[in-house]
Amino acid sequence: MADKVPRTELTRAIGESSKPFEETARKGEEIAANIVRDGLKTIVLLNSGAALAMPAVTTFIGFDAAAKASLIYPMGLFAVGVISGVFAMATAYFAMCMHIEGSRADGELRQHQHLHFLTDTMEASGVKELEAKKTEKRDDWWRRYKRWRLAGMVLFALALAVFVAGAIWVFWLALMK
Image (cartoon, rainbow, N blue to C red; front, top):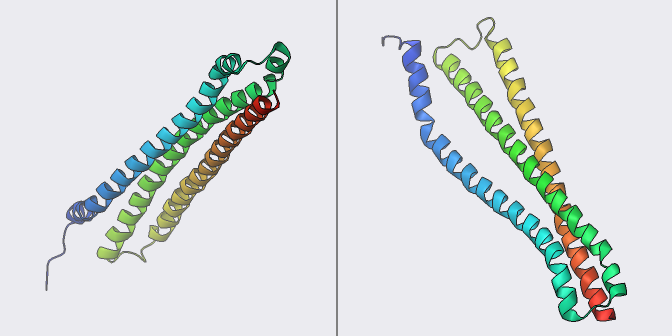
């Protein structure tokens, strides 16, 4: 009969076996974070650039003073877009923090389950309660992540919508000139 493997060796082996998967997940998360960051930068730059360029464009088109006064509303829309984009960046940051913590809690739970499965102590007293606590902790992080992600998507959609509305409004004013 084979000798029992020490618990420390099992823990190390379990950790080593999941490294390739964790590395792939980390690279995927990094790519996703870069895409989110670039998209949010773009929406903030679009709104702020539109607001800053509007006086020059209206002068180029030849708006009179009354028409320039009507541009206050599209400028307000672009300002709302900038603010919404900045808040979307903040929510994306918090969502990524929650995702990292959720992934970490998921890894701890998986390691706990593997260790107790391999040592045949799944039914030992206290193991089920500890597993339930770890599961609840993991689930709590994922719920937080989902909330922050949803808030970020809503704010991003708002920033994009007000940019489009402001651009259409300015275009319409230019056509009515």
